[in-house]
Image (cartoon, rainbow, N blue to C red):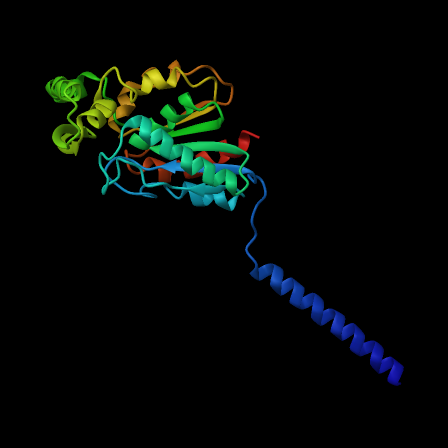
Length: 269
């Protein structure tokens, strides 16, 4: 009888351990491994802050195994405009280095609005980028609308750069068609607003070296009317590149397209 009781107790103990193990598995978050080794840099738009209007995309990609970071860029609410376009590229280098230190072996650059502009610009300059996602691309210094707003200021900025002026001045700007002003040094202003300068999306798209490009635009976004020929079609062909139109505005497109972005990234490998 004692042997039978011992056996029963042993079975009960085994069942108890298995039950605890099951409860632990249920309670423990499951982290997908599909995107392990993928690093994601998310670049916010003009006049906002790190993580603003990201549509939950970085978190959704992390749930699939990626690691993500959202740096505070020179065009943020508190820094605007605190560095040149090229200096912003160097800041993104720092974000990429941080992801590599966490084990990322392939890097995706995602941006919204001016951040999308910078994402394309960065990938055009850094061949190590594995893919680019441009959400509601914005800041179009070469367009007639922007040039009408900034033309005289560009001439003034060039003159000030020529005499070595590095102080901050008030300059004309536009945010989604709305005239506004911003402060910057002449060199920074030129780097961001020169119609022949480094922040021109079509020029940067044409220099992407064949990297996969996902372009997402809402049908209520001002850039929607420019269509795919504005910049997307200028990028070197890649069979995985996609141009997606969603029912959304400039700020809401990332949220609306979140799952499409995640599925596209997962489809790359």
